[in-house]
Length: 120
Image (cartoon, rainbow, N blue to C red):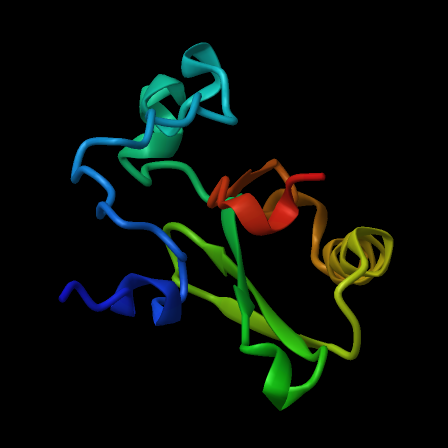
């Protein structure tokens, strides 16, 4: 007497999936645009004015709020921005406002963390 308990599994399959059944995803960022291709003066944090930015997203149950960090490489001056929603336009608008308020010497470049949260 064979019991058909497989029917009560979430996937409704008799056989389980293989461990290597999924294909790897293609990278979203082109290799030539990677962080390793930055100029040496920025990568080694020698010159003042080159900033790094990151975006921290929280779980949806905590709401749509997120935090953006903008840090200068040499002085380690950091600005944290609290965003009330997850739209990319609002994020870029707030980041541009902060950059406008900084002196001209501190506005040379921004390197983003290139995470998937900024991808469309």
